[in-house]
Amino acid sequence: MSNSDRTSKVVPEAKDSLDKFKYEVAAEVGVDLKNGYNGNMSSKDAGKIGGNMVRKMIEQAENSMLNK
Image (cartoon, rainbow, N blue to C red; front, side, top):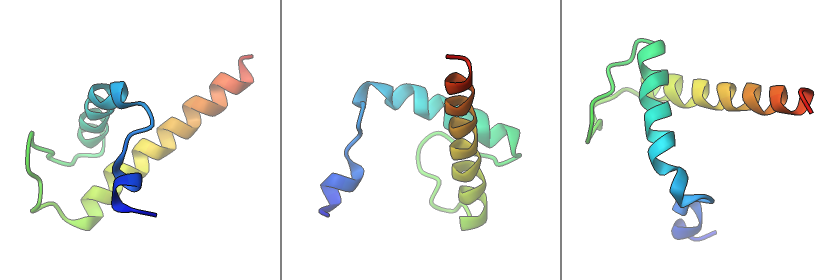
């Protein structure tokens, strides 16, 4: 798999919504995420954000399937 395959977005129009979601989750878990470069963030904090984003997306998908 090439690098461009891994970084391309399935739905490019969702970028703004995902960025907003990322900042909301960061605030919920107590991580000070700044606009722009966050290269000084620890892997632990980055994992908190990403892990919680995935957990919330899975919960949302499960709930939408149950409500069909």
